Length: 105
Image: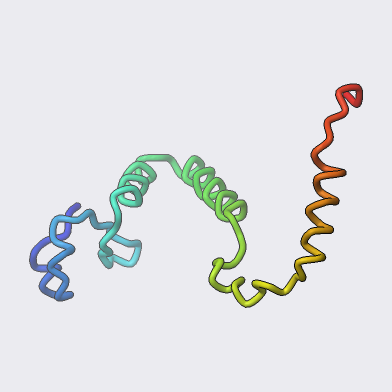
């Protein structure tokens, strides 16, 4: 399904014209990106047990997604570690972490 001109006028969003749309369970229509629309279109053709597997897979993906904060929020910590401490850390990493013991395996 593609967004119609009538729907675009209703929402005063002409840029949505011709974009994929998804009809939600409550009957509402939402503008969607192409990937989401394709996934939903394919999902609707699957039996319920396979739809449940897809749901579980998506939930697992969400849980494994990267977590953290944007770098901008970390800028407040810039300069918090002294140059001397940074040099000690660099030296410890170089001494302890960059060694390969070929006989270890």
